Amino acid sequence: MINGSLKNLSQMLAKKEISSVEMTQTFLDRINKYNPTINAYVALDANKTLAQAKAADVRIANGTAEPLTGIPFAQKDIFCAKGWQTTCGSKMLANFVAPYDAHVITQFDNAGAVNLGKTNMDEFAMGSSNETSYFGGVKNPWDFDRVPGGSSGGSAAAVAARLCAAATGTDTGGSIRQPASLCGFTGLKPTYGLVSRYGMIAFASSLDQAGPMAKSAEDCALMMNVMTGFDERDSTSLNRPKEDYTRGLGNMQGTQPLKGLRIGLPKEYFADGLDANVAKVVQEAIAEYRKLGAVTVDISLPNSQLSIPVYYVLAPAEASSNLSRYDGVRYGHRAAEYDDLMDMYMKSRAEGFGAEVKRRILIGTYVLSAGYYDAYYLKAQQIRRLIADDFTQAFKQCDVIMGPTAPSTAFKAGEKADDPVAMYLQDVYTIATNLAGLPGMSIPAGFSNGLPVGLQLMGNYFDEARMLDVAHAYQQVTDWHTLIPNLDKPNLVLPEGKV
Amino acid sequence: MALNITDIKRIAHLARLEINEQEASQTLTKLTGILGLIEQMQAVDTAGITPMSHSQDVVQRLREDVVTATNQREAFQANAPILGNGSAEKAVDSGLYLVPKVIE
Image 1 (cartoon, each protein chain N blue to C red):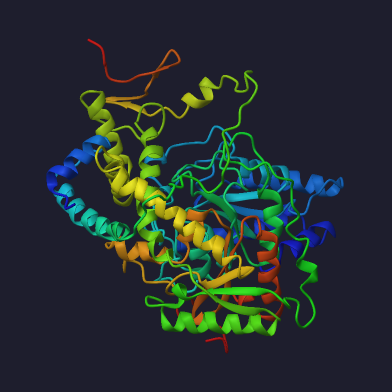
Image 2 (cartoon, rainbow over the protein chains, first blue to last red):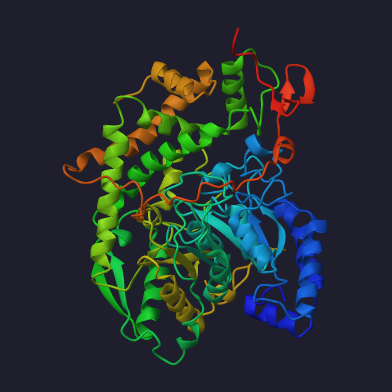
């Protein structure tokens, strides 16, 4: 059951083969068994979770169930959930109990979904390995010595280890897609503005976007149907008609379902810095797409190499402003001893934030400080437009862009923890879409030395339904997305015949 | 623009982050590395390019001038920090938050 698709789980519930309470308990039992090692969840509350499952069983019994009713999901600890500890991976919010629900949480609640708990993450979503979490690192289920990626590392490990049916994540520079690549599952960052940011703790507001992390494109499509939609409480939420993201999946049958699809291959994504084995797996996946009828087009995103410098101006600038709210006055950490108000601010923030968050606050403060604005912030915003314009040009030649999600497979814990610049390069292929506001996706495409490799799909604005179709077509003819790690021998067992 | 320890301390003060000598020194090394990465931007000619602050070309919505939020003072103050300086009580009193005296 733990490997069942959302559709399968929903059918099992509808046919009364299993109740939501039983299904939820199965996942809670797995969490109790494996979470002490993996550390994917930072907050669990079985009473709350099972109460939701009981309510879901009532809905199923009285015929008001929706596609996700009764199915247990994990929620990234960046989403406020009323009555749940909501920490964003920080000591600053270690004792914060959310007094209201994020829009995403409300959408899952309204759909009758069950919340299994809150998942671990890099502090304030700043990191690519989950190592900046105040609550400790997370193990990659494929190899416990390695990181799951980040910042949505807890959700990633929970999906890969089948400690939930699926999970939510957020992606500011790659935080859904890079962990999806490193842990071997399907993750989607939607077009900016499709999913409300209300109640999602802010990091870089012009880049942050929530999305699904799941076992397949089909599961992501079902979650998108629940997560998206206009919300007047988010000033950047887009008021568009609701879409059914599953509408095209059924057409992905036959031998050449993608006949005529033009796949753009940006030369910059296959240049220096990409691990050779990762490149090989990605090329094999693209070859598979040609068999499905797609044609490939060589394209160029000439300014994409600048996306990391631009991001490390804009994201810290927005973060330094967003995180100024943590002052120890109304909520969050306050220092135990202080002299005056200034001392209280200085000590509370110094104690409440970890090293990486402080670094980004300092960079953001610096680039916004008097005399430096034009050289850094304005310049970065100008290059941001060049990066977005590259995509506009590229999508005149192709329908979807493909390349690697991350430059390597999962790395060892501690390997990059002391070198922020090396860590930042993990997001070299994902950041450009955040800057442009475009949708991006990672799907499992194979393995390198027993570790998963992700293929990235980038689409035009609001083209998620087509991207999901394209991913689904691949998942109809390959089985990479169905392979699961052996949690009892995580460092020993490679998928048979798959390495 | 090379940073020095004085810059780090000035920025930390602007950001309201207490920093000691050792942290300032470590931070200088890390920030210098990061700013080196950022410096790649300077090679690009951006004359005449309109800055992009946001991916969607949308304007701020207006709403009716009516009350939409209800008073949830007690629920919000349940998250008040511990007062500190020897007190284990929450930093609230009569529905207000307690902070060090700011007006003589």
